[in-house]
Image 1 (cartoon, each protein chain N blue to C red):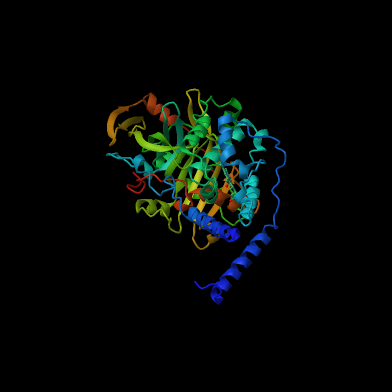
Image 2 (image 1 turned 90 degrees about the vertical axis):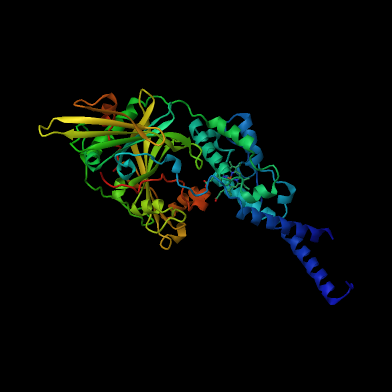
Length: 324
Length: 168
């Protein structure tokens, strides 16, 4: 280790240069501003406290970055996360939504925590104490669960569902003229004849769903080839409003929407190998305004990307035995 | 010489970030088939091979049911608002106990099956219909009751009265 050797000199010079660059970049600082809080989420103090310590840095107008986030390039990453985070969900602004809407957002928040997506894993790793502990998660869950007991559906809702049913029966077997989604995905009217792969009771948004699969999907389940699902797989998720009767049993009320996921690794490479479509209302109006709507679908399915972007765990046993 | 140390520190932090981003397997996401909800036992038909007519949720009992039908039943239910199913029509109501959806807080999904009920419509030469009702319970599912009559019993009548879910 003779000092003064050309090699050691070069190392020192490189270190000095790096440090100059490092100091220089500290002056490139897009500002993170904390505008006044207009409408903070309304929730019990224990719930708010958890959100404050784990989420507010990116999802509120009360961002308080620790010193090591103030140093570029870490600062740049933080700045981007705060900007994108506030855009996705801002706990300082959602207080003006209805109580039900605020709870809806909390359901989503808890899902992001449970699936390990939030706080962002990288942030969790370098910010001690930012991860939501199991005890804290229980506090959040207990706030939303159990849901309020169901009341019989109001008469107006029942009448609207009845009218929709009558119109549907009247039009029986007529294939409706349905527009494709703006990303080119066409509606598949035969979805209703596919087999059931599961059902869900979405008490968070008062809907109930049947998830159906085409023949390729059913074969894939029978052969346990469901990650990745084979090309040609199509799922349809059909949603209805929950319509509780006087005994508290929730029936399928008004049809809400049908959604398709179509597997073609090549054709839909830009949207994770799935073609996404959603048609709403009995007149099956395409959901997207332009082709970019599919990114919304992908974002929502991202927490289950390790399961090929699919939420449903299919029931076993559709494949055995046919008609009669 | 503190600045270079800071550089190394940052580098380490960066590596940590990358490592954290790549790991983090979540057991809720792990790929699996819902075997728990499989219909075990000897059923006369496999309802899961049929088409769906409608479904309902009984929150108090923590169950969710799907009503399936063979082709004759589905064809009738989707095109008629009455309850006069044709001869040969078979309805199958599968009732599962419900479990929390591990992948979506705010949703319930099928857990183990509680019962499977079949209602069959048979019309004799005189066109007089008769109904049979069979119920399977337990694990594996075993026949727990069976009735045949010229008038459907209360439960069979309730199942026959469930109208098809709107599927445009």
